[in-house]
Image (cartoon, rainbow, N blue to C red; front, side, top):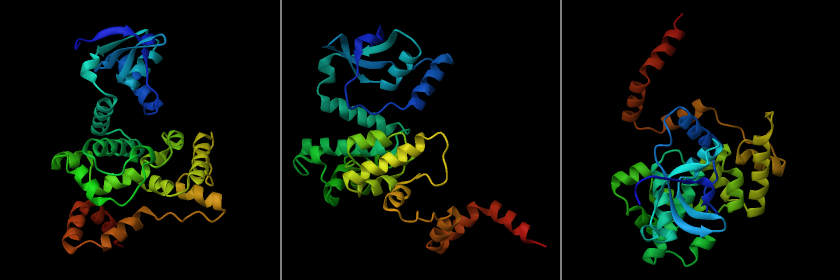
Length: 285
């Protein structure tokens, strides 16, 4: 069926291990609905009896949560024929593709999606190591990662950020255990590749301790300067060593500028001419 149909929210069950709900995104959808715009795209379900439910959610978990939070008993839905939906793998592939094209995914969520997509690709093409999906053993596998990236057009690689290096980084980040990923999924480090790669490099026990420190700090009503905000901060606190000195933003730019070719430096000057002129005027006596 392709025509939207209203069904009872109570009749829908959500499969386990779906991406954690982001309260801020749910609240945004709620505000949009209350503003009269409505949830433009119906959620998708398919008939599947389970306990008291009649349908299995395919896509639209945040929309479902928003409508339910508004106290609605029913929601507009596209009911898919199970034959159209086919396998769980195909559902996951489409979900990953839609998630990647949406730009609000965190680095953590994006990495898990890319890693899952790579697992599916390996299973379908007989590449990679057996059991990678369970253990996600990470090895420097540039050739296979490159083959996976080349499944996309050059334009798609640019838009989706799919490259040999990004796939390898995603596989590293995906080694973080699911329970820890859930704990940090709404923390600022979930959108920092540097922090996530640093966390992934730690043993599982240390990862759990680091995640605990970070989430305790973010949940505290009053954030003080000695609370860890990054993985490096948390490691320093665990090891009882001085926290790393944060490099000022200007110093990062200066370091990068010094490594540029002359033509690139000239381009930088042209782009920031107004700021340079302002600075020069301020130096005049």
